[in-house]
Amino acid sequence: MIGDQDAADRSRQAFTERFGSAPEGVWAAPGRVNVIGEHTDYNGGFVLPVALPHTTRAAVARRTDGLVALASVQHPGKEIRTGLSDLTPGTPGGWAAYPAGVVAELLGEVTAAGGVSILVDGDVPSGAGLSSSAALECAVALALRDMLELDLDLADLVDVARRAENDFVGAPTGILDQSASLLCTAGHALFLDTRDRSSQQVPLDLAAAGLALLVIDSGTTHDHAEGGYGDRRRECEQAAARLGVGLLREVDDPAGLDVLADGTAEGDVLHRRARHILTENARVLEVVAALGGDADPRAIGPILTAGHASLRDDFEISIPLLDACVEAAVGAGAHGARMVGGGFGGSVIALVEADAVDVVTAAVTERFAREQHDRPRTFVTVPSSGARRLA
Ligand code: GLA
Image (tube, rainbow, N blue to C red):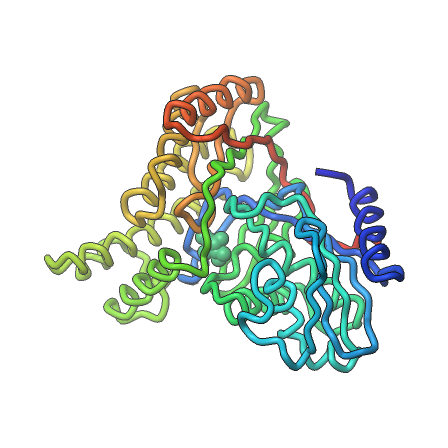
């Protein structure tokens, strides 16, 4: 992880080496961890993410030949060049699909500008459930908005980036990651109601309370353009349809879910999926309430661990390694721990006493070794800034 000035210099230099002239500017957008509120976003529910200090940068300049040219410091080799009118889901694929998807969303404006060159660089761990893909989309969306002076506010850019992910990359996600990357502010968690898009910045100074938020990247990857994530989304939609509501958010009382449990295996699954969404929305509200006023933030620990149990048992998107990681962290004294992100791999967060970070890290590392898994990557994070122009 490097500071904004070094990041800007590095991106500017890499762009100039690659494209032979200086970029018009450099923008950065962060990855995120979600404190609580998992899979609630596409159900119209609540989320509470914080931005990571890790960012993806986009150095950008207009072209005159009607092409989009994409290069990445993390993926050396020849840059990808495509005619703007040739952009279509799958072309380009891989990492380039994310910036290309944003360009495709703003096709008219980029075409009128004559094309665009984009150099990306970054340090958000990828495939770790920390939203490296949203960081990439949001850095490019903000860069194009500013460089082309487009009349779009941050909420519009959330939609541009989310549509790139849904329509171009093909991952049927909600707006959690893009909202976190664009709207989070340093020192705060973003309390977002994904139904009406209202939000509130919740002060979160764990260090002042002697606490630390430890991130444990398990090293197991996930891909939301595939299987499991889309299945969960469909199951939630089916549950809502059977309940006669547009979104599960509209159900307040857990007893209202009982009709789903009709004695069939399918009914049982839909009941548990919906129960996760209802209880998870309640947990977000509980955590926000616990962080308000003079309350001790340690109080949120057990709520995080309960969220993990719900993701494991009702939503069934955890994996044994993440369960073991949560168990080891809590066993070593963490106030609470849970998997974060879309699931089927990725990272765990643990709320720990600042002076217990080493003990918890050692316990988790030892547990990974016992599970015959590579050592996890761990770091303490603080709520950091959202997307911004660096140069
Ligand atoms: C992924 C998606 C988000 C959200 C989370 C789960 O990160 O991109 O939209 O659904 O999973 O909370």
